[in-house]
Amino acid sequence: MTALTQLEELRKKIAADSRSLREASDRLGAVLGAASKHPDALRTYRSGSLASRFTNRPVADADGGLVIDRRKHPALGPDGDGELPRALVDSVHSLIRPLLVQRYPSIRIEKMKRGLLVRFNEPLPSGEDPSVDLVVALNRVEAPGLWIPNLDRNRWDPSDPERHVELFTSGWPQLRQTRQHVVRVAKAHAKQFSEPAVCSFNIAALAWECIELAEPLDRALQRFFDYAANSLAQRLTADPAGVSAPIKVADRNRAVQRFRTVADALDLAIEAGDDDAKVYEILAATGVFWKLVGPPPSPVATIHQAIASGDPMSITKTGTLVAGTTSGATSIKPTRSHGGQHVATYHRRSSGPWYGRFADRLRFEGNTRRHVVGLRVPRRPHHGGVRYRWNVAPPGCERRQVRIEFRLSSPGVPRVYVDGPAESPHRYEDGALCMWYPRDPLERRWSYGDGLHALLGQIAVHLVKEHFWRRTGEWPGAEVPHGAEAKAAQ
Image 1 (cartoon, helix red, strand yellow):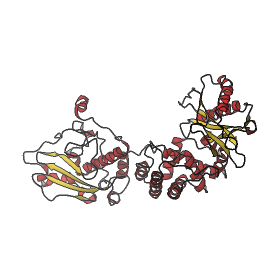
Image 2: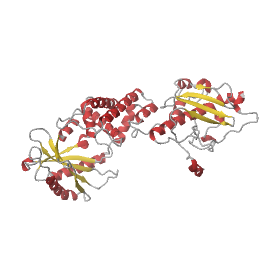
Image 3: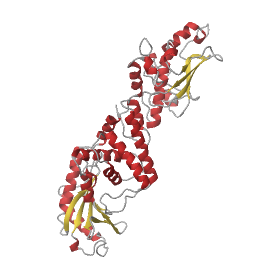
């Protein structure tokens, strides 16, 4: 799966439901139709994400406005005496409620800083219940755009929402579509954070500035995030309509950093081609689309496929996978990760541990030493045991140094230690990996008879699972609870 296909899947995942969009549009139309009957109405308009086709799932609201005939209210606004439309908003409320309640019996209308908030309290089957924001505005006398009231701060702000929609929906169809897709994915990225660095309008304005070509989504998004990072590093984004002040950003440095992180990640994801694991790892990394990309490729399936897909020598030369043997691919068992006490699964013969007998050791190691890059096989037992070392970079992970110990006290039970991050829900108290439940049947755990090659495969799978857990907080595969829960589960 390439970056393009993964991003297209993401776009479809966040796409608003067509029925919800229609319902939001109908509700907005009903509110605007009722507002247009006000005796002081000059016109109504649609604005915001719904009008610009930038809406994602869930569909929460629709925006529109009522423009008042200033000839009937000369004291209103900065071009008059600066009077705010509080009484006028109340009169609009009194007018539209009886007109709307016939169609929407559960409707509730509240005053907000720009006008009225209309709640319908009629959830759709999807659970969405789009509301409508109705702004009560005035035409400006000597400049383009509107005066929009801010009832909370007792002031008027210049803006041109009608022009914004006109600009954001301009261009030939393919360009409009590219712009819409970029804005929607960028908005979804921003909303992953508990405190978004920029508002949706800022994202739309940046996209309008930089998206000038119809191109594939991965390239267009990389262009957008790169442009956004560079632009915000230099200045605040200008109002596309040229009416209001530059768009404010709560934390510009944070916004630039987030945009740059995504731009660089998209660059790497595009270069990764159709490497599923690598593309997923890049796009799901913290600071990119970690809440949105999915479903992830199964780490176990990724390794299974890589082992069985071709010449084992060509696979292992990269040092990133466990490879099949010359006689066929080695099976990696679907184990249940566990944490608890080491349990012996090997019975020592009276003549001593297996690693002291040449034939048994040859059988255990097989052709592994010849076909697995980065493996160091000991020449002789060490301090009553034997120790293997392995330099490996499992799919999507950083290179790790692995130490495998078989001790005299339990020669059939490997203790596996790795460098790097130690956070994991499935490790023993001494830091060793707990890759299987010792009391599971043989088909669900590694045993001495499976050999070294299969053990390396289980280690690689476990490291990928740990890496996935650190990124997402979820363990990809079966697991057994620890401690008291483990005893209850037996």
